[in-house]
Image (cartoon, rainbow, N blue to C red):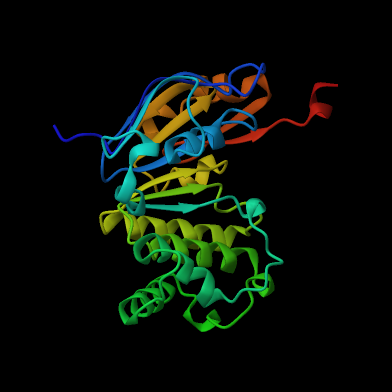
Length: 262
């Protein structure tokens, strides 16, 4: 059996004296997976992503990416593409789309080296792949939410990653643009890229991925969407406020407003 591309063993993450953001998490992700991470706000989804990327250290346990601790990846770090939450990006910085995408090449060429012909060709190719080539000279702040996310995806792809990690990539993006992005990620997965995506859009995302992880501080379930996303699992994640509607292979969920309880 091949080595997992990401593995967490008994991982706990604490911020100061607060209760654990993640507690005793065990998770093995094979290379070639297309995985969605679900859970309510404050469940530890972003903490999980940041720990995998090596941006925070676990308080307890061990994380391995490509068989190494995240902070010991060295040159292997360039094999990871990352698309952060759009809310974490400064959109007022005066930079063109082409320049944003070129930032993804710095992991390959180094911060203080000038991009060469091959770098420019790769940047052009990934912009075409994600359908933003016509926006190359536009300012990033002038784009729609869906366009920006495609630009940040192109930046991540410019690293030529084996592993692509996305944190809530469709926040603030309309339904049509969200589905278009999911279809693009599905195509990238078919090309051989391992994709890990944090999302809140259970019903739609589950149509595209081949595996899900349900998180609420702990991993509550991990497996294929049609097996894992049961009434009981979603109720464990979201509590009694979750209302589940069955349509297709997996349930769609809404959370009851507080007024319903009055």
